[in-house]
Image (cartoon, rainbow, N blue to C red; front, side, top):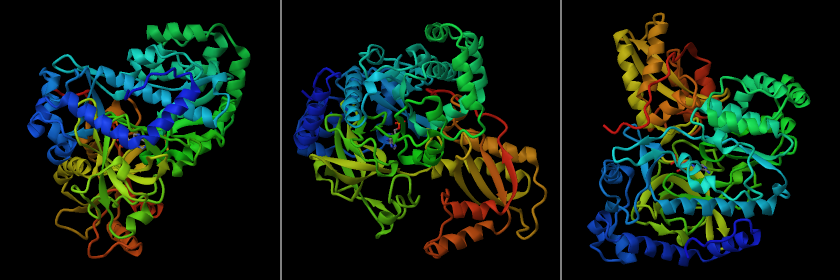
Amino acid sequence: MLLPKYDPDNNETGIKILEELTTNVCQIQQQVLEEIITRNVNTEYLRGFLDGVYDKQLFKEKVPIVNYEEIKPYIERIANGESSNIISAEPITELLTSSGTSGGQPKMMPSTAEDLDRKTFFYNLLVPVMNKYVDGLGQGKAMYLLFVKPEIKTPSGLMARPVLTSYYKSSNFKNRPLNRFNVYTSPDETILCSDSKQSMYCQLLCGLLQRHEVLRVGTVFASAFLRAIKFLEDHWKELCANIRTGCLSNWITDVGCQNAVSTVLCGANLELANTIENECRIRSWEGIIKRIWPRTKYIEVIVTGSMAQYIPTLEFYSGGLPLISTMYASSECYFGINFKPLSNPCHVSYTLIPNMGYFEFLPVKKNGEKVAQDVRSNGVRDENCVGSETELELTNVVDLVDVKLGEYYELIVTTFTGLYRYRVGDILMVTGFHNNAPQFRFVLRRNVVLSIDTDKTNEEDLLKAVIQAKLILETLGLLLTEYTSYAETSSIPGHYVLFWELTSKGNNNEPLPELDREMMEQCCSTVEESLDSVYRRCRKKDNSIGPLEIRVVKHGAFDALMDFCVSQGSSINQYKTPRCIKSKEAIEILESRVVGRFFSQKTPSWQPINFA
Ligand code: AMP
């Protein structure tokens, strides 16, 4: 009942289900909560608060709103072999490693077998939405570049891996009906190849070979799409040589990839190789997507939230194709669908799907009108808008049907898989309603200051990492007096930049001595080594973040930054150096005072998860 079964190929039924889900929001949310509590009332976790009694009111009164730290001990007990029924009556079948971290390690979210069906149901709902706005999608293929990430077994034998890796490896993905919407240019074997370079190469090769069939292209997040373009820039000659000769490069050693590609690369195709080569040879790659895949109707990539920083670069390569963010989801739960996929990225809203989980909302109190002005559209925001200047009202939590237009909230979720009143950490703004279902703009993730790919570095993590590097400076007789950072994404992959103002110990006004390059590079590596595990995975395994850079600025540079912030309206009394800057002008003020640039020369170490 809560997960209706239907033929996903039947567009009309899909639309009808969406209409029902978005009309009966209140009723469905009540059923979801009732179902979750009834099933799980005897778990150790809920028994502690509800004493075995099912009651919605009691649930709201007694079950606390929690952060990961509060449920971490339960998750760790399950990872270490205790029965999953301490939090979930349904067996936990795997743990999903989130890009959010706790103590430097990925948070682990419980998942169940049934949860895969819930995700499949959600993915199927995207089909009628796209079909409504774009014609003829069934007459060709999707070049979706999808990747799996490393996974490990917990001491209890459960798999711990990212949510999409779990989905792509599931039988739900493998046995997806090859309906008109599900035909990809990438054979499954190339998606499932654990070597990301071989996987990327083979997927691009298959996409090039089928260029005239491709109607849409995409990756999950925008950062990955740009990485694919960079990869194409670096490898087009070799890819074309493979197409010309009909032979796959011999560094592709993954047998699954070899076999799968051989079914697409059958024989030499001189003409195709020449055409692609001619396009790639043109010096400017403006509009390259449309030139290589001329039938493409849109690019499906998430460009909301931290991914908004990539919109201008994507627009350059896309040749005017729409950028479509279809969904809003996480390791905890899949949340919402964009019902107007063709809308401009800065106007994208997601409608929460009420049978995915039980949703509550913590009002985010704003400091006067400031936030409303700053958070005008996706990705345009003031990094201070949540945190010291705003407060979360823990007492006035409201239900999905009670959120108010124009207000900001933090999302809280109760899932079918063992999370109860869990703070996701995302701040959303209500932009409208689809039937009775509220629609939300993704505003920002609480606390995150730097993000290039799926990494989410907060101020505290950054500070801890900087403190480690400061120890090296001290041995050189130097003091770090100020620092800030920004995500440099004008080149691919992007990288973290730290601006540092240094003085000589005890000699504030003395000019800085010549900086020892090796030691400064060591500082860069130390910062990287101290950042969390998701950052280090992106750097080491995914190559989705480039080497961290420290730019040393002249004495007084941070005073100039302060003058600028004050001129923009910051209070001089309350001024605190922002630990991350985003505005072009602020970056330029520091940039014009740079006296030395240093890059990390080592990739940081990384292990999937440390269960010690
Ligand atoms: P993870 O748990 O690693 O899957 O990351 C989930 C988080 O990614 C969410 O809580 C959001 O902060 C972010 N996210 C997911 N989908 C979107 C989206 N469509 N727009 C913006 N941010 C998103």
